[in-house]
Amino acid sequence: NNWNTEASVLTRNTTDPNLWTGTFEVNSSAGAVMSFKYVLNGSTWEGNVGPDGAQNRSYTFTSTDPQTLPQVYFNNVDNLGPITLGTISGDQLPLTWTPGPAIRLQTKNDFQTGLWQDVPDTLGQGTATVTVGTGPAYFQLIGP
Image (cartoon, rainbow, N blue to C red; front, side, top):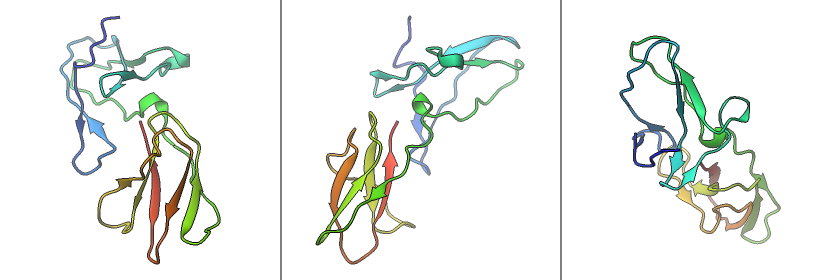
């Protein structure tokens, strides 16, 4: 299909590390349709993301002026679902969530500052047991 994983590379947003953006020049006329899709790490292509489950996304040009495509999510997954907290036993807290490829659990102790850190061994999993202390702990799911 001539798709190239190195063409039109996206850049991670500096203020939102979960957002990737890019600017590309495409010369086309109003009404023309462009097919596109995204790839993770040069190997994991999204699939069945187009209209009615088609393999590719599509965008119809409205004019020859510069245009901004709407924000989309990899594989159209815009909500990774809730994290369920189990009962604490000692200092151990079990967490569960709906697993998925490239989805992982992250944590941090201060919601306002600091970076989210991956919880080890949660990539593609649906459960984890974490050690809790006396202070706050926040969790989120992150993925494609």
